[in-house]
Length: 225
Image 1 (cartoon, one colour):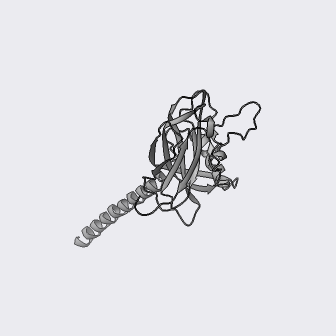
Image 2 (cartoon, rainbow, N blue to C red):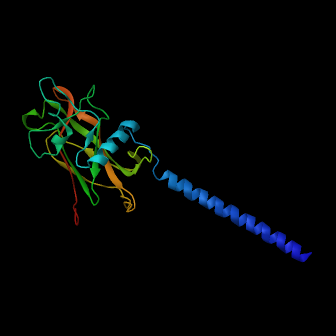
Image 3 (cartoon, rainbow, N blue to C red):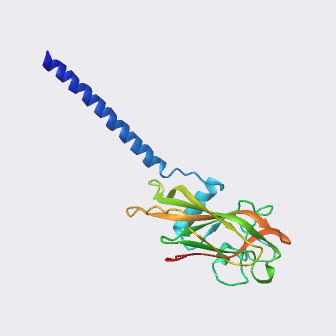
Protein backbone atom coordinates (compact mmCIF):
# COMPACT_ATOMS: atom_id res chain seq x y z
CA UNK A 1 0.00 0.00 0.00
CA UNK A 2 2.83 2.33 0.94
CA UNK A 3 4.64 1.45 -2.30
CA UNK A 4 1.55 2.29 -4.33
CA UNK A 5 1.21 5.66 -2.55
CA UNK A 6 4.88 6.40 -3.10
CA UNK A 7 4.57 5.63 -6.82
CA UNK A 8 1.52 7.87 -7.09
CA UNK A 9 3.39 10.67 -5.33
CA UNK A 10 6.40 10.32 -7.65
CA UNK A 11 4.10 10.34 -10.67
CA UNK A 12 2.55 13.62 -9.49
CA UNK A 13 6.00 15.15 -9.07
CA UNK A 14 6.96 14.06 -12.58
CA UNK A 15 3.81 15.63 -14.04
CA UNK A 16 4.42 18.93 -12.21
CA UNK A 17 8.08 18.99 -13.30
CA UNK A 18 7.13 18.27 -16.92
CA UNK A 19 4.58 21.08 -16.83
CA UNK A 20 7.22 23.45 -15.46
CA UNK A 21 9.69 22.52 -18.19
CA UNK A 22 7.00 22.93 -20.84
CA UNK A 23 6.07 26.37 -19.51
CA UNK A 24 9.72 27.45 -19.42
CA UNK A 25 10.24 26.29 -23.01
CA UNK A 26 7.09 28.13 -24.07
CA UNK A 27 8.34 31.36 -22.46
CA UNK A 28 11.75 30.90 -24.08
CA UNK A 29 10.17 30.42 -27.51
CA UNK A 30 7.95 33.45 -26.98
CA UNK A 31 10.92 35.53 -25.91
CA UNK A 32 12.87 34.41 -28.97
CA UNK A 33 9.91 35.14 -31.22
CA UNK A 34 9.52 38.65 -29.78
CA UNK A 35 13.20 39.51 -30.30
CA UNK A 36 12.47 40.62 -33.87
CA UNK A 37 8.90 41.88 -33.70
CA UNK A 38 8.85 43.97 -36.93
CA UNK A 39 7.36 46.99 -35.14
CA UNK A 40 8.42 50.43 -36.42
CA UNK A 41 8.37 53.79 -34.65
CA UNK A 42 6.81 56.71 -36.59
CA UNK A 43 7.78 55.46 -40.06
CA UNK A 44 5.50 53.07 -42.03
CA UNK A 45 6.42 49.40 -41.86
CA UNK A 46 6.21 48.27 -45.51
CA UNK A 47 8.40 51.01 -47.06
CA UNK A 48 10.91 50.43 -44.27
CA UNK A 49 11.10 46.72 -45.11
CA UNK A 50 11.77 47.64 -48.75
CA UNK A 51 14.50 50.02 -47.59
CA UNK A 52 16.09 47.22 -45.55
CA UNK A 53 16.17 45.01 -48.64
CA UNK A 54 18.02 47.74 -50.55
CA UNK A 55 20.48 48.22 -47.70
CA UNK A 56 21.04 44.46 -47.67
CA UNK A 57 22.10 44.66 -51.32
CA UNK A 58 24.32 47.72 -50.81
CA UNK A 59 25.02 48.95 -47.27
CA UNK A 60 26.93 51.97 -48.57
CA UNK A 61 23.92 53.81 -50.01
CA UNK A 62 21.20 55.20 -47.67
CA UNK A 63 17.55 54.90 -48.71
CA UNK A 64 15.21 57.93 -48.60
CA UNK A 65 11.45 57.86 -48.24
CA UNK A 66 11.23 60.50 -50.99
CA UNK A 67 13.49 62.70 -53.12
CA UNK A 68 12.78 65.99 -54.84
CA UNK A 69 12.76 65.89 -58.64
CA UNK A 70 12.71 69.27 -60.41
CA UNK A 71 11.86 69.88 -64.03
CA UNK A 72 15.01 70.40 -66.05
CA UNK A 73 17.24 68.57 -63.58
CA UNK A 74 18.21 64.92 -63.51
CA UNK A 75 16.49 62.51 -61.11
CA UNK A 76 19.66 62.21 -59.10
CA UNK A 77 20.28 65.94 -58.64
CA UNK A 78 18.96 65.93 -55.05
CA UNK A 79 19.58 62.25 -54.40
CA UNK A 80 20.39 60.91 -50.95
CA UNK A 81 23.92 60.08 -52.10
CA UNK A 82 24.63 63.83 -52.17
CA UNK A 83 24.78 63.75 -48.36
CA UNK A 84 27.83 61.50 -48.61
CA UNK A 85 29.92 63.21 -51.29
CA UNK A 86 31.62 65.77 -48.97
CA UNK A 87 30.93 68.53 -51.49
CA UNK A 88 29.69 71.72 -49.79
CA UNK A 89 27.26 72.75 -52.54
CA UNK A 90 25.36 69.46 -52.92
CA UNK A 91 22.55 68.11 -50.73
CA UNK A 92 19.59 65.74 -50.43
CA UNK A 93 16.08 67.22 -50.54
CA UNK A 94 12.92 65.30 -49.69
CA UNK A 95 10.14 65.42 -52.26
CA UNK A 96 6.94 64.75 -50.31
CA UNK A 97 3.93 67.06 -50.30
CA UNK A 98 4.27 69.69 -47.61
CA UNK A 99 7.35 70.50 -45.56
CA UNK A 100 8.47 66.92 -45.00
CA UNK A 101 7.20 65.95 -41.55
CA UNK A 102 8.14 62.32 -40.83
CA UNK A 103 10.07 61.96 -44.09
CA UNK A 104 13.07 59.76 -43.41
CA UNK A 105 16.39 58.33 -44.53
CA UNK A 106 17.48 54.80 -43.54
CA UNK A 107 21.19 54.04 -43.35
CA UNK A 108 23.54 51.28 -42.29
CA UNK A 109 25.16 51.95 -38.92
CA UNK A 110 28.53 50.17 -39.03
CA UNK A 111 29.40 48.04 -36.04
CA UNK A 112 31.50 50.08 -33.62
CA UNK A 113 29.93 53.41 -34.55
CA UNK A 114 29.72 55.82 -31.62
CA UNK A 115 28.41 59.06 -33.16
CA UNK A 116 26.17 60.39 -35.93
CA UNK A 117 26.93 63.72 -37.63
CA UNK A 118 24.37 65.75 -39.61
CA UNK A 119 24.76 69.08 -41.41
CA UNK A 120 21.28 70.60 -41.89
CA UNK A 121 19.96 72.50 -44.89
CA UNK A 122 20.95 72.96 -48.48
CA UNK A 123 24.57 73.51 -49.44
CA UNK A 124 26.25 76.77 -50.33
CA UNK A 125 24.12 79.75 -51.34
CA UNK A 126 20.99 77.58 -51.40
CA UNK A 127 20.83 77.31 -47.60
CA UNK A 128 17.93 79.74 -47.04
CA UNK A 129 16.06 78.70 -50.17
CA UNK A 130 15.13 75.27 -48.80
CA UNK A 131 13.65 74.22 -45.46
CA UNK A 132 16.23 73.27 -42.84
CA UNK A 133 15.71 70.66 -40.14
CA UNK A 134 15.08 72.17 -36.73
CA UNK A 135 14.43 68.90 -34.91
CA UNK A 136 15.10 65.33 -36.01
CA UNK A 137 15.05 61.89 -34.50
CA UNK A 138 17.55 59.16 -35.32
CA UNK A 139 15.99 55.80 -34.49
CA UNK A 140 18.04 52.62 -34.30
CA UNK A 141 16.98 49.11 -35.29
CA UNK A 142 18.58 45.69 -34.96
CA UNK A 143 17.96 43.86 -38.23
CA UNK A 144 18.17 40.18 -39.10
CA UNK A 145 18.55 39.59 -42.84
CA UNK A 146 17.10 36.13 -43.25
CA UNK A 147 16.34 34.77 -46.71
CA UNK A 148 12.98 33.43 -47.79
CA UNK A 149 13.47 29.73 -48.56
CA UNK A 150 11.03 29.78 -51.47
CA UNK A 151 12.22 32.95 -53.25
CA UNK A 152 15.81 33.13 -51.89
CA UNK A 153 15.22 36.87 -51.36
CA UNK A 154 15.75 38.77 -48.15
CA UNK A 155 12.90 38.69 -45.64
CA UNK A 156 14.11 41.22 -43.02
CA UNK A 157 13.16 40.93 -39.36
CA UNK A 158 13.83 43.83 -37.02
CA UNK A 159 13.22 45.51 -33.69
CA UNK A 160 13.54 49.10 -32.49
CA UNK A 161 16.29 49.55 -29.91
CA UNK A 162 16.41 53.28 -29.18
CA UNK A 163 16.52 56.91 -30.30
CA UNK A 164 18.78 59.97 -30.43
CA UNK A 165 17.30 63.47 -30.75
CA UNK A 166 18.90 66.25 -32.79
CA UNK A 167 18.10 69.96 -32.44
CA UNK A 168 19.69 72.33 -34.95
CA UNK A 169 20.34 76.05 -35.00
CA UNK A 170 19.30 77.86 -38.14
CA UNK A 171 22.85 77.65 -39.47
CA UNK A 172 24.75 75.25 -41.77
CA UNK A 173 26.59 73.88 -38.77
CA UNK A 174 27.35 70.18 -38.31
CA UNK A 175 25.84 68.66 -35.17
CA UNK A 176 27.29 65.50 -33.70
CA UNK A 177 25.37 63.27 -31.29
CA UNK A 178 26.43 60.14 -29.47
CA UNK A 179 24.69 56.86 -30.30
CA UNK A 180 23.14 56.78 -26.86
CA UNK A 181 21.65 53.28 -26.98
CA UNK A 182 23.12 49.91 -26.15
CA UNK A 183 23.80 48.08 -29.41
CA UNK A 184 23.21 44.33 -28.95
CA UNK A 185 25.98 42.02 -30.09
CA UNK A 186 25.57 41.06 -33.73
CA UNK A 187 25.04 37.36 -34.41
CA UNK A 188 27.93 35.53 -36.04
CA UNK A 189 25.95 32.63 -37.50
CA UNK A 190 23.57 34.83 -39.52
CA UNK A 191 23.63 38.19 -41.24
CA UNK A 192 22.57 40.94 -38.87
CA UNK A 193 23.10 44.69 -39.00
CA UNK A 194 22.28 47.95 -37.26
CA UNK A 195 20.12 50.41 -39.20
CA UNK A 196 19.59 54.05 -38.31
CA UNK A 197 16.66 56.15 -39.51
CA UNK A 198 16.77 59.96 -39.65
CA UNK A 199 13.22 61.33 -39.25
CA UNK A 200 12.30 64.99 -39.85
CA UNK A 201 10.16 66.46 -37.05
CA UNK A 202 10.37 70.27 -37.21
CA UNK A 203 11.91 72.71 -39.71
CA UNK A 204 12.97 76.27 -40.33
CA UNK A 205 11.01 77.50 -43.33
CA UNK A 206 12.69 78.39 -46.60
CA UNK A 207 11.52 79.81 -49.90
CA UNK A 208 10.81 76.30 -51.23
CA UNK A 209 8.75 73.83 -49.20
CA UNK A 210 11.28 70.99 -49.37
CA UNK A 211 13.54 70.07 -46.47
CA UNK A 212 17.19 69.34 -47.15
CA UNK A 213 20.31 67.88 -45.52
CA UNK A 214 23.77 68.78 -46.79
CA UNK A 215 26.02 66.20 -45.11
CA UNK A 216 25.75 63.05 -43.05
CA UNK A 217 28.18 60.50 -41.67
CA UNK A 218 28.76 58.02 -38.86
CA UNK A 219 31.95 58.03 -36.84
CA UNK A 220 33.76 55.98 -34.22
CA UNK A 221 35.20 58.13 -31.45
CA UNK A 222 36.65 56.53 -28.34
CA UNK A 223 38.00 58.10 -25.18
CA UNK A 224 36.90 61.37 -23.62
CA UNK A 225 34.02 62.65 -25.74
